[in-house]
Structures are given as C-alpha cells and as structure tokens.
Image (cartoon, rainbow, N blue to C red; front, side, top):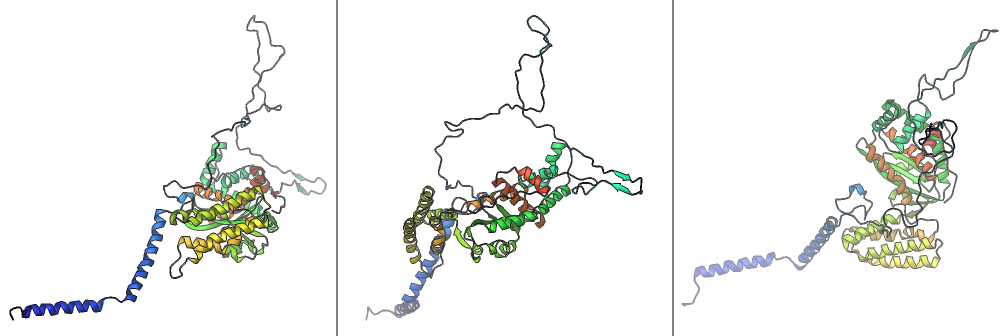
Length: 475
C-alpha cells in the first residue's frame, strides 16, 4: 500500500497517455507521407532548374541573346583561336600607293640658275623628278541655273518656249548627287538626321533641313517600288532562301524588321508584328516553293515550302545546357554536328550511308533523354531542347543529306546585323513610314553590296530611275 501511486501521479499519467494517443491519431498515413515526399521532390527539381539559370546564365555565346545584353562576364565563343600572329602574315605581298600616268594638275618647281657658277638655266628642262599627291578637291555646293528660251513667232505671233528636263519640277531644288550622298550617309553609314545635316554643312557650308533629308528618303523609296517588285519575283524563283527577323524600336515600342535573302539579294520589310500576320502581309513566303532556312520560329512552319533549320543556334543552346545541367549528351550532339559539318566542307556530295550513320548516332544520343522524362513534372530547359532536337531531327540534319543546304542561317543573320547598328547609332525610329523607307533602301544597298557594285553610284542611279538588278541565279 505504501508504494501505491498518489491521485496526482495517476492523473498526470492519464493526461500523458491521452496526449500520446492524440499524437498517434494525428500522425500522417503512409500515403500522405509519400505524397508529401513527391511534392517536395518536384519543388526541389524546380528550384534546382531555377538556380541553374543564375549559376549559368544565357548569353550571346550559348544562346541567341544579343551581345549587348550580355552580363559583365567574358563569354565563350564558338570560334576557335587562330594560330596566326597579328598583322600581315609571312609571305604576304604588301602594297602602297603607286604613281599614275594621267594627272589633273602639274606644278613645276623650276631652276633658273646654276647653284655653282650662276649660269642662266631658264631655257628648257633636261629631266624631271616627280612626286604625286592624291587628294580630294574642296567640295562646295554648285548651283546650275537652267533657262528655257521664250520666242515669239514673227509670222503668226505664237509664243514658243523651250522644254526643261522632266526632273526639274521646282523653281529651286536639290540635285541627285546631293540626294544620293545623304541617302548613302543615312542608310549605309547609319547617320541620324542631325549628324547627316552637320556633315553636309561641314563639307559644303550649306545647311540642310530635316524636312529636306526626309524628302530625299521618300523620293528614293518611291523610285525603288518597281525594284522591289522585280526583286520579289527573283526571290520566288530561287531554290534556297534564308529568313529571319529582329526587333527594332519605334517610338519606344518594339517592332520588327524581317529579312528574306540569299547570296545575291537582301529583301527587308518593316512590320509591327513578328509572326505569321507580318509574314502574310509581306507576301513572299506564302508563294514560295523552295527550301527556307530559318531558326525554328513556329510561324515559318505554317508555310508549305520545304524547311531546313539553323544548326549554329542549336550549338549555342547545347553549350548552355552543357554548362547549366552538366549534360554530357549535349556535348556529344554538338561534336557530332560540327564533325559532320567539317566532313561536308571537304566532301560536299556526301554518300547516303554517311547520312544514315550520323542519323543513327544522333538518335541514339537523344532517345535516352526523351525516355527518362516524367510527364508529371514540368520540362526543364535541357528536356525542352532534347525534345526539339528529336522532333526536328530531319531538318537539323538536312544539310548532310542535300549538298545545297547550308549548315546554318548565318546568311540572314549577317543581313540583320547592320539593322542593329542603325538602332545603336541613330536610336529608335519616330514614324512607321520612315522605318519602311529604311527597310526598302537598306535592302537595295545590301543587294548592291553583295554584287560588288558601287553603293553611292547605284543610289544615284536609283534617283535617275535606273536602279540596279542582280542577275537571276538559282542556289
């Protein structure tokens, strides 16, 4: 009886057991714990993917991001370092300015007396020693007055007048030389209105207004309308075209410059939209039946032409996935594509067996990544790239199968580079009209340049309604 617990001890024991029983009742079931673990696993994967973007950010070396948007960090280039030393290479033949036989002006430094005996040497010259200076003469505005005569017939009294050339429409107007120079400066050298006017003033002492410069653009654009129609017909006859688009600012908002091009032609068009609505308005791709090389933008696939995809862009994406996810398969695919490219450069007409071998190796690398994907989870950047490579494998590898298909879409990308230079130098456009002027004139200039013609001279010819057209070729 002495060891019997007290009432208080029994009460405390009952309370403790009651608490323990409640804890047991509230303990989650096995199924609840399993669901919690799966939920936490999903969240961890999402956070790891998000963290990888910060640890390995996209930049111009591993994605299509422009170099201007790169973080302050040295990025990796796809180009391999050259073993050549800077400057002229060994065996390179140097060149310098050579004297010419025909000159515009001669200045004679004569000798009139002998420096030894003082004898008169003013008569005749035995030999010449010469130096030639190549320079630009002083440039100034030249005003030419055109007059048409008025004569009254002495027989019938009718007053007769001469005829002005058709291009003389105003009492006072600018000539095609000055107009073409201004258009050249604004659309080839990318000068904005103010700096173009300043350059002309420094060069000639004549002050041009912004309205005059704007009118020069408008007139050149109008003269090139027939040119654009002819160029469109030539593009549609080509078996291979490149297409791309880039953003350009218009009154602080993003709009788009579209390019369709080949080795000899560049066609630009400005539109407020990027996708199919813009492409339909341009009106070329819906009529095209050849092969279009592009960067996998979904709107291009809505057209019934043949397609080929840019591998240069994929190489950058593979570098990003390799760095961010430590994905060895991305490196293997990248090396496979580059190896096939080099092999094609040596042997343009590859055998079907080579394509079959590369195709099988390509698929063998990609398929395990596709099979390992769990549909319950959101795709990571690595998985999205793997699925894209698998879906479009025939289009990525088409350059191996067909001799005329290029490895990349660099043709279109090169065409668009100067568009970005225009925005960096001149800022954004203030009106859609002038953006259209620039697109048309820039396309003409790029085409002239591709065909190794004189840009300034061909702009002048456009003002004279004698624009340049390249010869029709089929790639």
